[in-house]
Amino acid sequence: MNSLLLEAKQKRKFVSPDLQIQSWEDVKPYFDQLVSFNIDSETAMKNFLAFRSELEAVLSEEMSWRYIKMTCDTTNDSLRESFNTFVTEIDPEISKYSNVLDKKCLENPYFQNLDGDYLIMKRALRQREALFREENVPLIAELQTMEQDYGNITSQMTIEYEGKTLTMQQASVYLKKTDRNVRETVYRLIQDRRLKDRIALNDSLSKMIALRHKVALNAGFENFRDYKFKSLCRFDYTKDDCFSFHSAIQKTIPPILSELNKVRKQKLQLSSLRPWDTEVDPDQLAPLKPFKNTDDFVAKTLECFTEIRPYYGQCLKKLSDNGYWDLESRVGKAPGGYNNPLYESNVPFIFMNAAGSLHDVETLVHEGGHAIHSIISADLSLVEFKDLPSEVAELASMSMELISMEHWHVFFPNENDLKRAKKSQLESVLSVLPWIAIVDKFQHWLYENPTHTADERENQWLRIVKEFESENGVDWSGLEQIRRCTWQKQLHIYEVPFYYIEYGFAQLGAIAMWKQYKEKTEVALDNYEAFMKLGYTKPIPEIYKAAGIEFSFSEEYVKSLADFVYAEIQKL
Image (cartoon, rainbow, N blue to C red; front, side, top):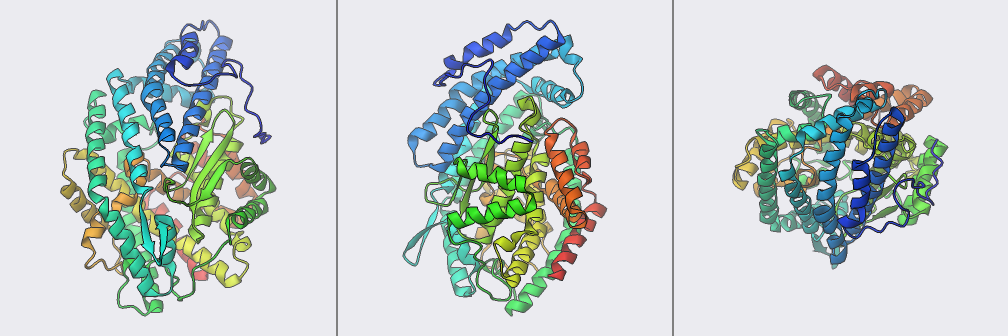
């Protein structure tokens, strides 16, 4: 196991430990050395790859810290400028040299003879080299800058309620209140605030779609979707598999959600469910309070992870003790949550926006799963081996959401509260699957039709949403304008296009992992660690096999997992 020595970075053998990165000129000499590196044996090739990986780790961590600091305080112009400098002045030059180094590898017979863990890396390098176009380098840099606009806009969104200024995350807590008037009032305040930036967010996406389409055309593709599938190195499934996933979810999940909504309406004594009725406890109980404050949140999280396996608790404690997370929601902090691997330090950083709700628990155990994955795979020798595809990364995090649920008594010592929390989590597991399918299907349309107008975009969103509606769905009458742009709350559409279907695939895998955990706890945990140790040295189906589960999204498989979750909900 990794020693968890967060206090010191890996000792550098190639890059100077005193390197300070202010400009491209500071790092260029290292790339020049790699370009001229003589590779005349297998040993020389492995040394070359090790040196290159060390440089990549240093640069990746530099960029990560700039991003972390910027998202922790989006109001700080100097932090934003620091990040922008990297993505616009340094990263484009790195991209050019990386292409030269990729070619150097691919043209070398000693690289071609590498096998085992190197096979996945070799196919990725071939893909990168085939996609590289120098004319796209400045366009991609421009896109990276534009993609920050979403966080800059949404981080400033607040509402005023009862004399308080609330972030969107803090305001969302009120949607669980038992007073329906409070829920509706806050819901409308939230949506009215979002609508103020509707045009700005539409304009921002339109500009990015146009630029992304240009990148695709430059690389010889008909559309950005086809380019992005290659860019994401999706070797183990195709766009048609995504369409199969959409279809399987559409046929299997809405009928279950219809039954759950029917029960919710009956318990709430409502003739129809409105958007502000979906988060409140159906038995009209007060919102769950999993922790008192941040210190309590941290303590309970560490206890939860320790119960699963003591080592997991140690992993999270090291992050906590060394300041490798930022948990609280505040004005000026970017929305959402993430786990950012730091490849030189061999530890991750966890970012989230806690506001005192059950969702915070779900978020931290999710990001905690990512963190454990980062630490367990840290001993892999190359950054390429640790740079995970999302289908694998999200399997670790989403599995931890469900596995940890068996230990949520530390957050909810009252048995009834614990059942409520579990039921809420399981219902969200099912309800998120159609949302994932909708968002993914929407993105396919966006880039298959890159010249669409904002109005056409919103109309298409409504059409897709309605395809996945359940019989006892939410009543949106009078809220059509709000519904037309509900996609704007999904940051992936803006910041990481096409990175979302992975959550759907991983959610299915996570359900299978949880089922395995309930049946054979220690075997499941051993399998959990076995797949994490692989990093990305095997094809995705083989990694899922190491976890003891299938990489499948057939209608039959989806139905079997959905039925399992529904049966567990009924037990509660």
